[in-house]
Length: 470
Image: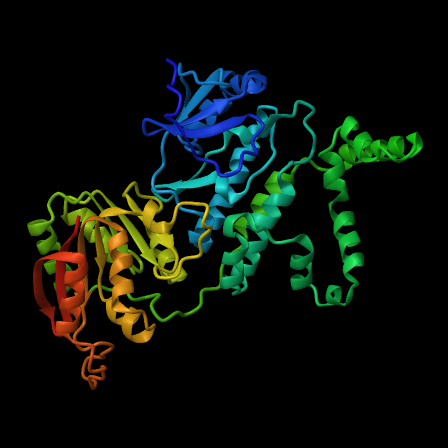
């Protein structure tokens, strides 16, 4: 079957894969393979490699199709994974689980005489909190069984270095270092690890890095590649370097992947206290509120099948939505990384569709060439419980800005709690500005949503159900 011209949408912003292109057509995710790469791609299927990865649940379901399109004699279909969660929205445990998954994939590839040319986090997607590798175009034949993993340096920079930083309490730096492929340079990691190296001249430090990775680079290169790199050197130098490579190949233990797995497994984070990390540890006083919101959802929003729980903490309310409403998928979002990490670890061995994402709802870290969070996480219903007063009173966001942002995530409904006493502690004194009152909230709410129902469900909780304006 030939795909009509003009109906496909390319999904890659940069065309760097020399095997083909990934695009969408009729809601399908397809990979078009170039003529020169057809045989090597077919080998991945005929050898049993792809089937093994599928059986191990390490990749999305992947199959050869009978589709055809200009310049692509072979088209492969991948099972679609939604929503797409980018690495900067992962937690510590998500990054660690991705690293271990990747090493399993690399070990299986080695058994089939394959190597990997890249391994960065944009090649990983989470399906029901399970990381899967999505780029089958990154595998290359390596029948010489070289004792080197081509992606070794990239793995260190994208996974190992950030995990060490994260373990040691540098959460912010670790998150930024996995943002959109801006990988940690080797020399900066060495400077972080060693006070002594900070006294080195920068050029000397660069030479040290080259020396440290010389054995790996030699083992990763074949004879023609070595000779090309040394094209300006005489034959004796070229031959000597190649002989050094053969010596290293003979004495280097073939255990680099197992060694990396051991190192990653040994990385345990040191938990630190955050203001809201344990907010959902117990339900107690939240139970009656949550019960009533569930009842109202079932009464007024029966056709909602997907939801996003903004500021969802560990996902306690998200789980209740799955258990007691017709909603079948909930995205649990929070800016507290440790709360999301706890929720992710509690749910990752289940098949429940609670999807955990960690980013600042009002100020996400984004790359503007990729789909924004509200585009990827848009759901039938948005829940923003006990959140509005923090955004308007503590963080100073204008109410219009907050409601507009909430509305962007909704296809149908919103459920927002208004706290008339603001940042009030039970038994304490109410201290709110004069403009912060129920009439003020109702006025702004009505600008963006049709009010379905409002009700006081607690001493400091008034719930508003609304429908988005078309």
